[in-house]
Amino acid sequence: MKHAPQAKNLVTCVGAVLALTILGAFCAGCFCDAWPFADAWVDENCDGLRGDDEEPLPGVCVWSPRSPADPPFDPEYCTWGHGRTNEEGRWQGDLVTGCGISYVIVAQAPDGFEPTTDTAVDDSMYAEFGFAREGSCPQISVVTPEKMASQQSNRLLGWVLFGAVALALFVLAYRKHRSEGRDSASPGDE
Image 1 (spheres, one colour):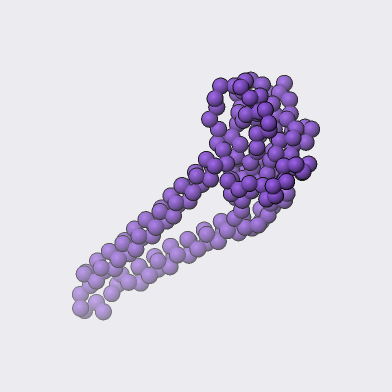
Image 2: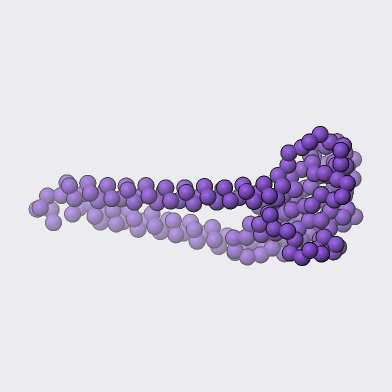
C-alpha cells in the first residue's frame, strides 16, 4: 500500500499543529495578569459616550465575576469602598491572574439612574459605564449581565458544534483517502 504512509504523515502533521495551537492558546492565558478597572459618569445627553463636560459618578457598584450573571461574591460587597467607584468615578478591581480566565466587568445602576451603556463588558480590562437620571432618556437597549450570559452560552455551543463537524469531516476525508488507496492498490503492490 503506497498511500498509507502518506495518510499517516498527514494525520501526524495535523495532530501536531492542533496540539501546538491549543497549547499556545492555553499558555497565553497563563501569563496574563491584570488589574481590571472602570469609569462611571453621568451621561447628561444620553448618547453613551463620555463628553468632556460630563461629571464622574461616584458610588457605582462594580465587580468582575467569572460569569456575567454571577452576583458579587459577598452580599455586602456593594457597601464596601472597594466595591464602588471613587470620587473620580474610577473603580479598580483585584488582580486577575491564571489560565484561560475570561474578564467580565459588571456595573449596577445606582438608585435614581438608568444605564446608557452596556452594564456588562466582556474580555476587557477596562470598561466605561454611563448612567443618566431616571426618566431623562428615551428607552435604550443595553447589554445586561443576563443577556451576556445567554450570548456566551450560545457562543460556546457554536464552538462545540463547529469542532464536532470539523472532526467528523476530517475523519470522513481520511477514511475516503484510505479506501481509495486500497481500491487502487493491486496485489503486487504489497
